[in-house]
Image (cartoon, rainbow, N blue to C red; front, side, top):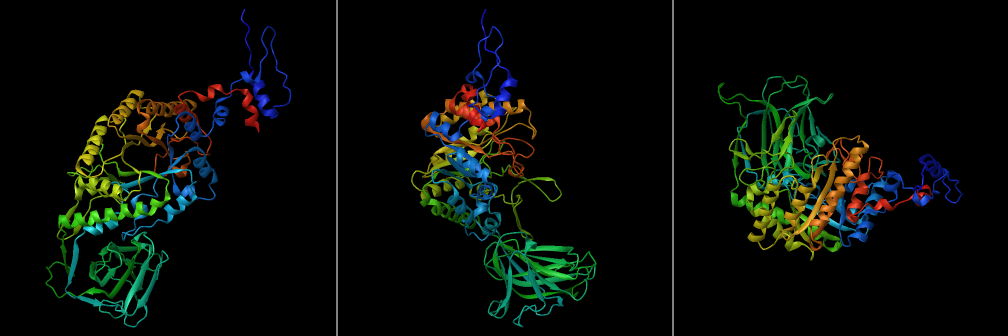
Length: 615
């Protein structure tokens, strides 16, 4: 008869609660069985996970040279009160990727200048031994749309018929003061300055320090009484801006409850233009007019403001227009030159700024260039982007329209910009050429896309894209990155193996750039968490099995925890990360470590480790 060691979980739990490993424990051994020792008692799952080392240490042990990164939020990392978040990043990963801080809309301002304040703060805090990977240069979203649009927008000319019964005082500011006018919002300033006017006389100078909403900074004139509902009023003034992308907005308002109407925006560039708009009040309490200047950070110059009833000197059946507006459109060549100049300024400025840092190892030059249905994004009217309008209706990006009466309408969501629409496939070729030209030596240049594991035809199109860049320009693509925002319930090892094999067959570096695993709920069961851990492990094991060591660009875990503030905009109502909302390691953490090691590391953990846990 074989004798077995017997383990009593209740005794094991009592032993852990005692917290004193050195005290002699009186183990109960039933008659006929061998005695039990702590070394034979396995750790419970959460205790086992807590006993795991940091992820980067397993990488150093089992896959030397492998970059294991985290896609982090720079704001959270810089938050001095969120020390646990910072410690998790520092302790577990050897490469940092900022989720948003290095994207175009975070760095390029609406006038085309570059603001590196957050980038510099992040680099100053990140430990010196961390690699840094840049993300990203050219995308179809999170672009500085206001600036880019200003470069291709037509020139507007307003010819006034002069038929306004002006009721404003000091609209030409020739008193040398701001009498009758007031201004507020967004830490803006206003001042009447000699020589700032249209003809060199006095003019109003408005300074808006940061991009915000149009109404965030306002210049106001309070009227002596409310406007008459149904009557036609005209606002007209001259304006220019320090930014080619300047924007001013007319509005009417009630000075007590701040209700408003009549909103109309003007594109104001660096040359004086005439701004004019007809407004018919629908509300009976409008007793203030506004010129809003909060949208684009710039200095604005305003002069010769008039407002009042339209003088009806035209036939009754004539169009009720205060002016004739004409647009002069730029040629395709002019648009191309302007956009390529902006692209160079952006890429050169960013790479030049960080070149001396020494920690940068790579950059996503072009992000998501392929639509889900397999076309080059932005080319031949294939866009693939969508957005939600003010009524909550989903709208889809479509071709821009230039109309003689309305000017340029992009038909793209906020922050969306398709470089390929105006530059063709040359946008990608030029982006890689510019990145290569200004990159520090050794920096690897990548293209990056998503759903490649479940959409093989999209991967084929991405490889076609890479081949085009390699064959059409003077710079080549170093690596291909797959994002891998995957669903644990809809992914197989066969799909993942096939993707990595096809990517490796290109001879390029292969990188997993944004790995997270959805499980379909923010309240996972033990089975959900185990499935998620298994998928993380499977992906990493497949990567190491199918990508030769010389082609491994590393992998990045996208996000740190399941905390709600990390998922306001990205995978809400789920639990896709390695740490839970309280920064506690999940089974997924173990899955990543086991994937790197190629084995169940925790299988060798025993009750002897309880002392460390208790302490």
